[in-house]
Image 1 (cartoon, helix red, strand yellow):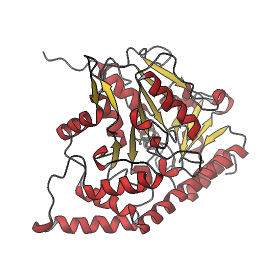
Image 2: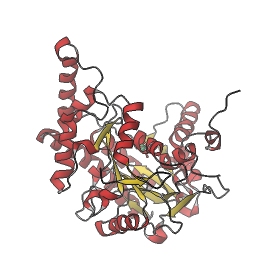
Image 3: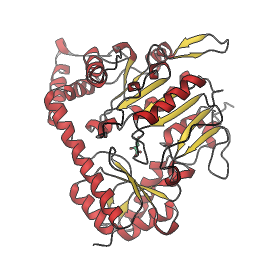
Image 4: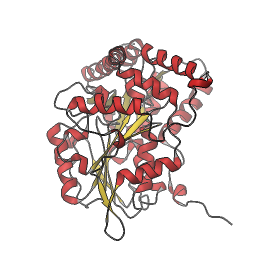
Amino acid sequence: MFRINDNFTKLPASYLFSEVARRVKVYTESNPGTDIIRMGIGDVTRPLCPAVVEALHAAVDEEAKGESFHGYGPEQGYGFLSEKIAEFDYRSRGIDIGTDEIFISDGAKSDTGNIGDILSTANRVAVTDPVYPVYVDTNVMGGRAGELGEDGRWSKIEYLPCTAENSFVPALPVNNPDVIYLCYPNNPTGTTLTRAQLKVWVDYCREHGALLLFDAAYEAYIREDDVPHSIYEIEGAKEVAIEFRSYSKTAGFTGIRLGYTVVPKELKGVDEAGRSVALNGLWRRRQTTKFNGASYLTQRGAEALYTPEGQRQVKESIDYYLENARMLRVGLAEAGYEVVGGVNSPYVWLKTPDGMSSWKFFDHLLERYHIVGTPGSGFGPSGEGYFRLTAFNTHENTRRCVDRLTGKS
Ligand code: MLT
């Protein structure tokens, strides 16, 4: 009989957001008509901006005619988009990234999950805790995690706690990991690291020969000057870091899917024989084999984001969400909640009141206030006793959420 990948059987029964959705479904089925405010999964709610919609329509019209139809595109993405990325997202910040270092994909979730394909299963991994569950779960699938302990930690993964005790700033690892995941602005805590704080990590990776997997999916929410938009703003980062970017939270592409990953040519690991190998070529080989490229339509849509109207419209949308984040942060803090995040991020991270467990608080909010959030413990052991709310809703619903939580309605 054939064998399955046993690593999958080690995983918790369901992915965090599937579990949240399941519980909400059970609740709404037994309480039909309840007015639920959804602030759980970080899914955008505002429509695509007009510049993107126009570009998508034009691209569909092209696909409708034989002379302008596109079949398979370049696996690494169309030049018309990677040139804009290189220019607007990097060169404008003084970072030199070549189009052949940019790999356009269907999103950062896939890329952060798939990157393990080009890394040895012998690598030791470190993650901040709490953490976006994709990093941990995909390392479980890949056989790098070891066994799940009763404390909720995988035996071979080094956890770097980020809690109120250390002001949500992770300490450097002590077990000499080979691969380190950082996500800033952070999912789930919504906190950021300054340029000086990120430099510590780049320097550490350079000294220890570690790979930094830097998830910058929430970069567009940064409004403070000392928070870098790209890890490559830090000197030497191109030798140690892969950066993941996404159009999901930036431009509302959660449904139409698009992102990209930067693998600098300088970035090298070693093979079993100790020879130096560039990751850029390995990722290209992986992508050209397993991925046929993001759709032409979506890439044309994203290209429109780099026009003056596109930039303005996207900023308007993000400002809208940031205003929600501000309402949550300020409203909850005024009512006595301990809150972080929500400044350069659509996520607000709060301490559950009265030492309530994260899932207990989830049930309490759903049943008493009809609000859906995400339990902090779902993001890792150090998330226990915390809870995440997102800014992805209307101003009106955000206000109602704050009022319900602070006893004003
Ligand atoms: C989240 O809620 O953390 C995100 O929506 C998940 C994701 O981006 O995949």
